[in-house]
Length: 378
Image (cartoon, rainbow, N blue to C red; front, side):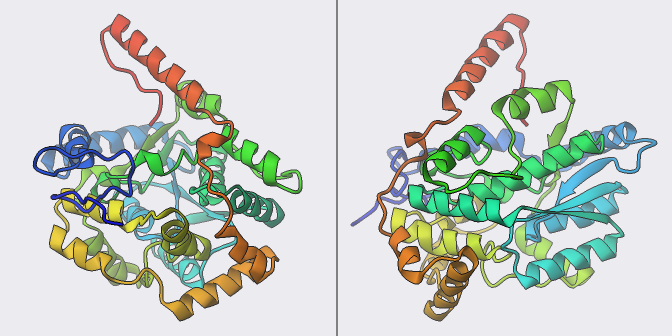
């Protein structure tokens, strides 16, 4: 099948909701220029804005053991943020959520960063039986967002642990320089606990005993408005270049790069580089590379060359699949069967979309009444 591709980035019609102007430029590129770029400050203004945020973080944490919390996955973004926080003189509590899929290299990178910065590291190990049952439920459901079980555990653990320790500022490695483009049609929110519980209720085999979730009310109202917690993305206030960040990590802490994106998690590597492209025709390299193009870190020609590279080495894929089968305690036939199950959209199951739309519409009405914009999330 032939797919129409944007003439500026490399997003194409594998995103069913993509649109193009008369020059062939897609809606994602227009969204970046008209909306996203206004929230990205890789300049002197960003330095000024971040300096103001730093003052508030340090003031809020004065007299406490920690003034912020950082979730450290071992990936480049969170790792770079961790060493920058050290340079800024912050006192973060560093938290890592171990969902059972860490590569040995990820563990080594985390240890190197924590040792270099002198941080306290809290590792939350997710109950493996809960995680295993969730993974299998999602695979049986045949939905595209297979990484929700890990992602939700990560964010839930971070929020709950921050609250427990009286920390009001969460620093995230999420950034617009490398993650500004992503098709909403590909899957729903990892924070949607309603959807997670609905999928597990239908396809799970046991009750979740220790798995922590965050409700819609907690995420959009309790934490930001009642607990006064704030999520900040410092990398949006600097000229963040991923290649330069990797080089600095290597020189500073001896960081070892992963052979491919998301190599810190075996499951995520398989999910993004095999499950999604084979079962759903979704190549997550396209939004990632497109983000690099619009942020000026890569040319379109370079991105197209990257897309010509194979997603997986056949021998490596076989090794990873055998490991996944052993870890999930299923047969190879059962595992292969997941690639053939009926495809479902996340919206085929109960979800929080109705609550979100209500909150968004309410926000608009309130903003109009008070004459200024308000936020329902961070």
